[in-house]
Length: 130
Image (tube, rainbow, N blue to C red; front, side):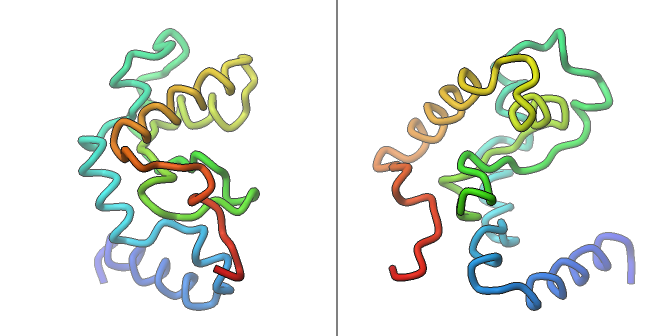
């Protein structure tokens, strides 16, 4: 197998061993593709030129999908709860070490609302009963 095929197979193996709740909090391949296309394969914060003075060239090259509502808080792995972020901005959001977390969450929320007019935070968390 080639590198990317191995990653996909490893991810599929890990996903199959997770609980239903844990799987629901991960972005599956289809959701990842939707998010990447929607976000034009770039960090939403870099696109808005948000605090670029704290973004490194290397950090900008490493993209991942950020949860608006975190997995630890039951956030689902659905496009309405995620956006593409570079390593620098993802760490800035997750760590909040620059005191920017709340502002970044407001920007993130508005971004998702702009793309999903019926967007609601209530629809973004795992609910065992419904």
